[in-house]
Image: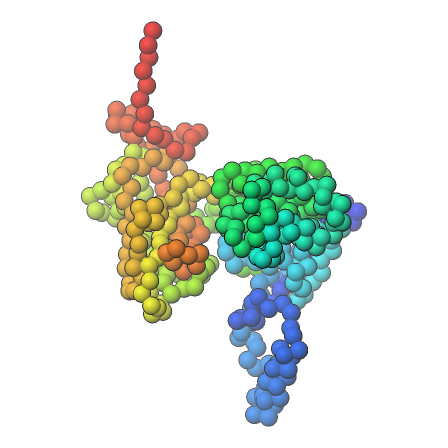
Length: 430
């Protein structure tokens, strides 16, 4: 990214960009005749009752983006990072011309394609093959061009057996694979990708990374949004950090990621989970606080490599009374760069959590297999057997692991290039 580049070198130029939404209508970007009629009636009623026009509007609007300016040169690979609600997806929707800005301007040099919600736009009654033709046609390809790429798309998607089956019978993973396969083979000048690595299995994620790397090495521009800092650092050269709709830092991706991680550590060290405003979910239940508990039952602020029978304790509060239902709780432990390392899930033990009042959940770890370092933990509460998120906090707290005698042989394990350690043995013969 360079503000001094000539216009001919720029793929994207953004100046003074702002986007304002009305709370309660955040997803509404177009208005029908009915919307206009209702709004006009409300305004007439306000005049008749003496209510000042616009007096209600100041409190129910907020800025998802404010005064955002940056340039992206042709061939740059830029990672856009930040917490949930920072404005990342809003920015990509404006760049992709899905929604219009409230203020500022955007200039795009070249054809842009987006993978914002992978798999959306498919017609569930149509087969996978028919959806490929439909989506590719919407990207501007002729039937001959689609035919030329069909084999490659099918092979990449991995759903050959079900290609002529209606999409409504696909699993969510199959739909994601097919959606990415179509969008990734359209050969745009600029590719915009939002959180495609948040779905799918490890093999699919590896293929996605490889394809995006292939696109970038071909001289095309890529904008990549992800919470996986390891993927961002691997793929991207430049970074943009957004917070509450404002650019906090931009420049070399490693420096931006380090700044982001340090700022998160400072916030997480002092902030109770109940105070976190960057959570997502329906909100009937919310994580209130966490504790780390040692084997002797005392609260601690770190664990030790090799330590046994420790607990991560989560307090969960009910905010809205609902019909008693069952839920699942997950803690994901990530590296400093955001790479998922391991997960603690109640559903892995096929344990159903009854959601009908305030409660707490304690995960017991029989032995700490993490090497010394700093790790981040995401927490998730959802409904059993469904996809509904009740409460999710990314990087809810920081987990410090100190050096310890993992093997019980008197040797303390300090910093190592690895992240995880296992108990093993070996033999020497000869």
